Length: 91
Image (tube, rainbow, N blue to C red; front, side):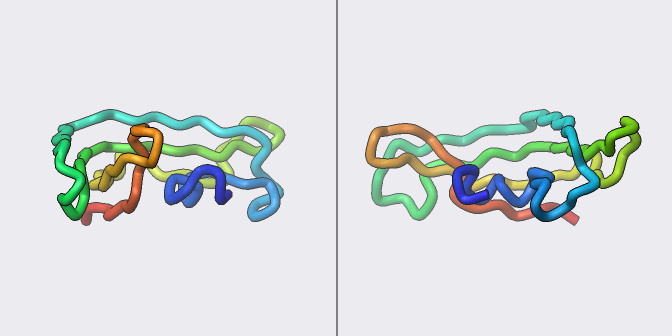
């Protein structure tokens, strides 16, 4: 899951949950604030609602979470590409 960074926590890897054979994800962006300053602790923030379903071979939900509010902390890598640095879920 390392290639997904902190977002890997939200994927249903088959080596962790062998019931899951396919996935559905939804992301609704609530608000985004970006800071160009490289000295900021986090260069950006993004409030989102996410939903994730892991489906078994019959198409039934084996694992899932729906409409979860989360704050994603954003930063830029050495190539200037934005990535999610940290995640805090809402109540």
